[in-house]
Amino acid sequence: MEINFEELRDEMVEEQLIKRGIDDDLVLNAFRKVKREKFVPDKNKKYAYEDGAQLISAGQTISQPYIVAVMIEALEIKESDKVLEIGTGSGYAAALLAEIAAEVYTIERIEELALKARKVLSDLDYRNVKVKLGDGSLGWEENAPYDSILVSAAAPYVPEKLIEQLSKGGKIVIPVGERNEVQQLKRLTKKSKGKLKEEELEYVRFVPLIGEDSWR
Image (cartoon, rainbow, N blue to C red; front, side, top):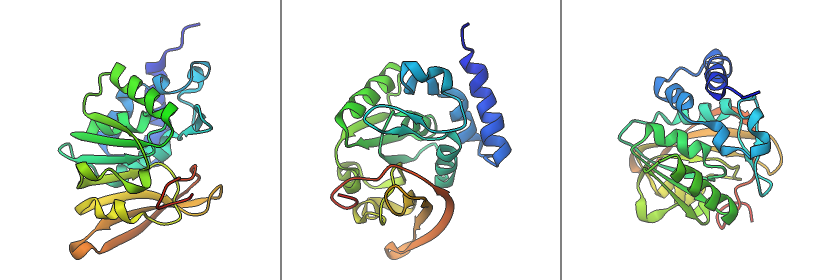
């Protein structure tokens, strides 16, 4: 029997996002538009809209829709913004960001994932997304500063280069904590003179951010 992905997508937005308090229209509309089934392996497409993370390749995951929504909503992205994502993975979050922001730059350290994400984003005609193979803990300096930075992997602390590449008034959302443990999702807003306002959001569990200024 053919799966009605559009119906499942609408149901996900209603049951998993709106009923849990996600109310930013830009975020909700992005989730209604982005075809999550395009970002999961073929054998798992029927599970694409379930309330949980999904395994992709290289031992990585595509995060639970609700957690992705919490992170994106917390960034308070405007339609004119330039956004940096650390940890491209499947490319799903980059697609969501691309539905909201003017420009999206996303970095992935695993070549297999970077190539797959670049292809699917291109196939879906996301022309405002650029994918780079590299060390996400160092950011993407040549395109800085960024209005928002989304880190889709857990770090022991907020990498210094990411703070430097954030514009004044910009926000970073990042899971901070031990590897393979529950981590604290944090939002940091860059104030005047480079000072940071830090807020604690949800408890989460992400794969580790591997890099020069993070976990080795």
